[in-house]
Length: 185
Image 1 (cartoon, rainbow, N blue to C red):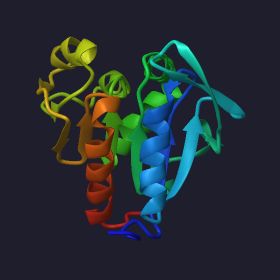
Image 2 (tube, rainbow, N blue to C red):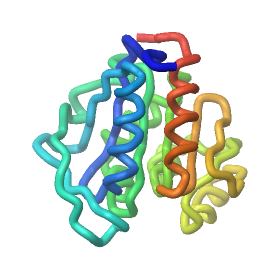
Image 3 (cartoon, rainbow, N blue to C red):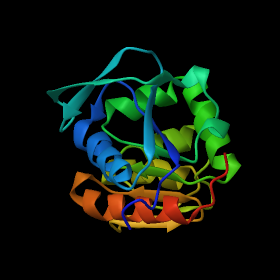
Image 4 (tube, rainbow, N blue to C red):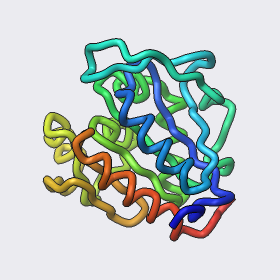
């Protein structure tokens, strides 16, 4: 399917504390399919990455501030995890509004590990079938989601995955999901 995402512009929304492999591997997989990936964050400059939440894992350069874009600028959205990253995002009203508007647009959104926390804050998991890292499952249920324990789950425009151990399945699924959606921008 090489080139299946040619012409697609995909946002990756992350903040300090992002789990390095959960940003790097999906981005690499999407880029390999021809997508243009754009790293968005709350602030410009760089964001600090982590391995297993605690170990320093370098930085990523931010391409754009989330305050400077709209969902209309992109064809799909990826929300990587790491515990600190989505906790920072869900405390930022601009990031939450961007995620809410993205889901409401009907364009595909993918979240892995702790990434669904931002979907909870945006009140966009109610009535949806999702998976996540085990420690988030009560939060998802309390927000009205049906929670399952599967490597990757797609419910309409939302695709979720449990953890870095599921990255191969997650990357394959999001590339396929993003490719079958019509370009909307």
